[in-house]
Length: 57
Ligand SMILES: [Zn+2]
Image (cartoon, rainbow, N blue to C red; front, side, top):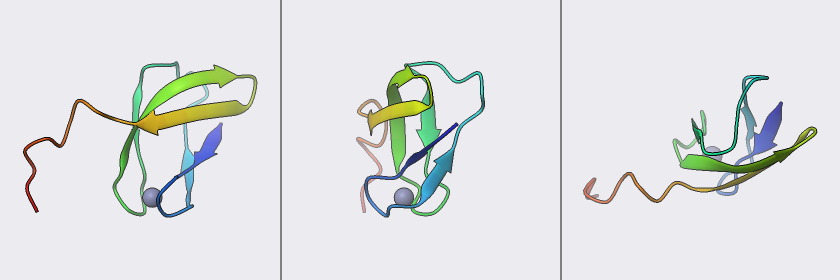
């Protein structure tokens, strides 16, 4: 499975056994996403909200 990064547009490869709620990271820009839902080969992702609060710049 794969999806596309909303920030840089690069493909993000996902293990075939990925499930909704898992965190994935874009290998290109490092953006973290949570898998919102998976329907067949269509993977919906949303920005992960529970990390990065204190990263600073
Ligand atoms: Zn990216």
